Length: 230
Image (tube, helix red, strand yellow):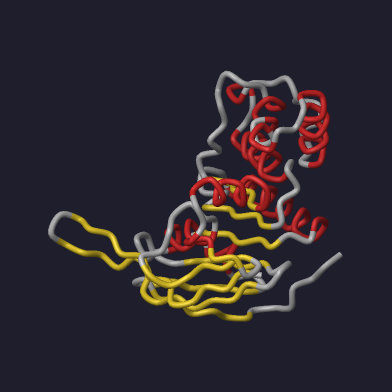
């Protein structure tokens, strides 16, 4: 479970101080699906970075299972991220000289997984996202939707507790967007993940069980529908 208490993030831009987050209080239960929506510059990606342990709040606390991420050493925080949190980005962030399978394997290297086991788990993860026949393909040989599937497999191969997605469909056309969202929804249901997604897309936001609308660093949470588990 996540518990955010009074989370503030303040940046300095020259002589100006900007409050990206202004005292956020938020609870995200295990297995929840939460979509974060808001205008550009409203703080949604900053909030996701706090949740993912990619940045630390100026004040307040972000707790995951009772552990304050902001108080961990960098080494311990990296360990929490590598073992418990999978992250998907809009730009895929694949290494162009590595095959799909090798890109997925990179998520297992920090965990000390042996080579043969890395290969097996990466192949399984790619098969789970519909790319079992594309293990040896480079990113340049894959479509945008397929590259995002590789990124999803990379995030899930370590079997994380939490899946974070920052505009995962932002570079995709509408049809591919729907395919990727259906895939993510199915994986959330199948693996019992805590799934937190940032989007500017109202079509995605309106279908979320819980919607956190963020504007000028402040959050309003709306319960929109009952989450459905398979």
